[in-house]
Image (cartoon, rainbow, N blue to C red):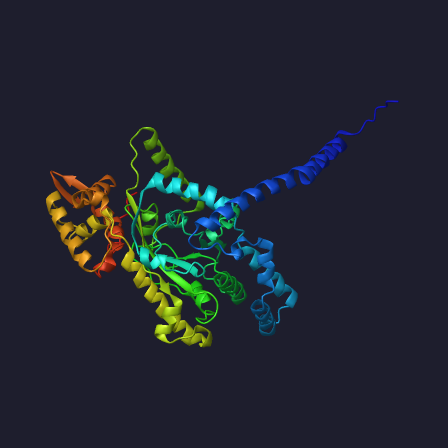
Length: 485
């Protein structure tokens, strides 16, 4: 017997949605989890045989487990109880904040996404924009690093491309974990960055409870052998020169280090330099105290205009890559050897003494970074014009002055990248880049710096100014000349 049952449309839609949800949860989701887990395990097995630095189990642990481990760490619980005694805040509220901070900080590394998609994307973007070159590497020193050590790449910070460039070049060695600022905590970028192994950091947070949670996570990751990348400067250079280092994350890494127990902690200095930094003019604007701050819409508009202009140049065949991007890897700094040489034990120092030792270590690392920053063509030619920016020079005079600088810097141990091993070509490339960007102009066979773009010229000269000991003013004293876009 067949009968017809009528139901309201709204009820039918609810039943259909529930049925679709059940099919997804009970049938499709388990199959997809099995498929992706199988692919991830295949990647991990391949990586364990290919990577020179081991991928620690901590990095592959599920995020919820890491959050729970961080939340229940004795150091965090002790900090919570101390906070309650000092402030009178209810313990349940303090623990709720700790849980929120832990969820904010802890990443969710996905090996498949990092090494299959992330590596391909980083390589494609880097090679699309630049002629990427590995200039110098202390191969003997790098080969001698114990694979079970905790490796931290410490580098100068010139551009947001630094993340992409170093992750791409280091992917044959290991998977890096970065500390990323709050600017990236937007959907869907936040989930993508977390899956690449990065953890979020609130810059200049005055909340001691948050700093305790962050400190504990960094210490846990370091003790577990997670390879990390650290920018001691704490942010992008504004005038092109190396900034004074900041010691927060460095302190978190070393304050529980013991030379006689566990892994060695090895810092690898990395120097980066570009013929063109995408953010150069926007960074220079920060030096103008009376500038009008751009809103979010204005920043997006400028970015879209820049992208559209370059896309049009690509389509019309008039686009050139942004010159050379060069990376150097210096000699590793082993903390076991470092503390033995200085006769120091970080775990036995009081707060002030440890801070002084961390500052000494930070300065040592910054010197090591500075010594391996590559001299690239644009920076070389910018140094020639920096000496006397008002002087008009012939191409022959420019090349003669540049060659004199090359010989001087080589004697000081600087690492100079010479494209095609041709010094004449290298100087010509730098001059052409500055001319195309209207930083230098040519008139009747003479080249002269454009007054309005002297800040840009100083910005690139400053990238290697530590070899000469003279930092150029990125903004004229009068601050009257605008930065031309």
